[in-house]
Amino acid sequence: MSLSIVILAAGQGTRMKSSNPKVLHLISGKPMLFHSIDIAKEVSEDITIILYHKADLIREEIDANYENIKYHIQDVEQFSGTGGALKGLTLNNDRVLILNGDMPLITKESLELLIDFDSDINMSVIKLEDSSGYGRVIIKNGKVLEIIEEKDCTESQKLTKTVNAGIYSVKKELLNRYIPNLNNNNAQKEYYLTDIIKMAVDENKSVNPIYVEEKEFKGVNSKLDLSNAETIMQNRIKESLMKNGVSMRLADTIYIDIRASFSGECFLENGVSILGNSQIINSHIKINSVIDNGYIENSDIGPMARIRPDSIIKNTHIGNFVEVKKSTLNGVKAGHLSYIGDSSIDEGTNIGAGVITCNYDGKEKHKTVIGKNVFVGSDSQLVAPLIIADDVLIGAGSTITKNIASGNLAISRTPVKIVKGFFYKFFKKGK
Ligand code: UD1
Ligand code: CA
Image 1 (cartoon, helix red, strand yellow):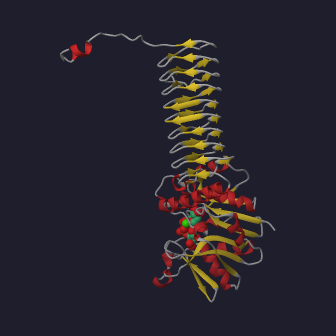
Image 2 (image 1 turned 90 degrees about the vertical axis):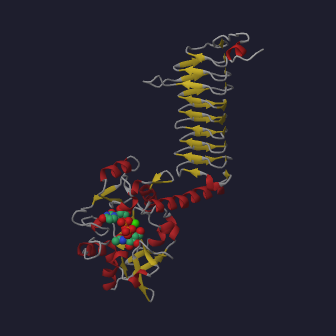
Image 3 (image 1 turned 45 degrees about the vertical axis):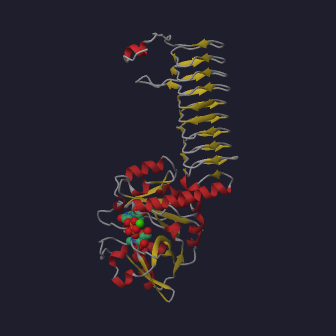
């Protein structure tokens, strides 16, 4: 049987205290809402996202990354709240799964627990020591009676530790009847989706509480929640990578984007950040290095190196304080303190300490191409656009402004001048 999925994402997310819409805040490099969409997509292709605040911005982000997502713009002026979100929405399938857009930690396995086509309503509940911030679920003799939002709770209701996790699987027929009958007679003057529970109970429908785990169903409402969710997601990502053979020294100090991939035998030392769609293959990334959208194969990087987007690095040694941007290096050694930008460098080439590719002339970026077996002496500046052929020697301290053909030495250096005894004269010390 098929399922319609609705993701609620129209809220402003005031508690985030941010100009960026709540659902676009990143967790492990991916917007919170995309985590929900990815999980939803594993279950059904019929996905509608409810938007209002910054709808255009959110839509643009989604459309750039997904196909066939439908949107429903909530009439927040008239019908605010999670119940208002569903007003006027046409649903395709007989069964509807409703997700809050601020719950990025759910896994497919947990979602499947909620999907069942027989009951009238399945709702997710969590038992929490500190239930503050959540709607409380009133259960008597194992039967759900209603959900009461915190702001509408009496002091004794507030003590309830069973809360609404915010995910529901409901028969379409019930939604179609209940949503038009919701009212906003409550503390927040909002149309609460949670009121459908009592409506169903009053009609003797079956409402099943599905107990779920806090670490998957925690809503993100504040920057503190965001940070806690990030920790949980990072632990998940790293655990799964370590199970697949990636070594991590002090894993707690390492950050890995959810889109990054690893293969072969990889070793990450403490403080490493692997960002974006980086691909790491049989490589060793040393202390405090950053790899951002890079392809790294059979190489060692760092400590304290920074590989910026669009770099392809194979069979290469990159040492400390080396920055590489948009460059392709194969079989290269760049051991110390270099900037390599918009370059391609071939096998057997050694980049000395402090070498800089001067890729930017103040207006435009230019390319540096360096061939095989080139020795670039320390502290040289390579002024792009520049082509250095195979088998070239560049003297230390040179500023290279023209192409060098194969087999040559290039050196540009001010000759050393010796002024005898000047030191003693200058400082007026006898000798
Ligand atoms: C909601 C539940 C609460 C539950 C909690 C779980 C209601 C009334 N309350 O509270 O019982 O314990 O989630 O995390 O449903 N949204 C809209 N339109 C709106 C308002 C919100 O689409 O007018 C979206 C938000 O973008 C968000 C989701 O609905 O993704 C939940 O909204 P939020 O304001 O975070 O609800 P809570 O107060 O957390
Ligand atoms: Ca919430």
